[in-house]
Image (tube, rainbow, N blue to C red; front, side, top):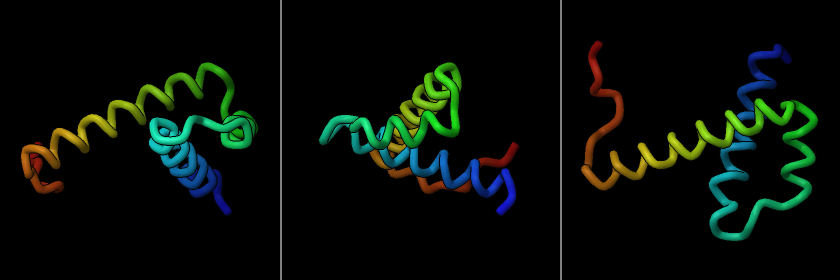
Length: 72
């Protein structure tokens, strides 16, 4: 497994854990697993990014804007 795939998987798991935290709290096992792959600063940045992504997803769903329509 390449580092990119591992990182993608770990980021995905962190996103799921942070997203679920609002409903059931952020458990120690999820934090311990993330801490094996990211330092404190990276975890803080990753959490901020996840919050931003979740918020943008909610805006897009609310406004019924389909993904993939952006053209630079």
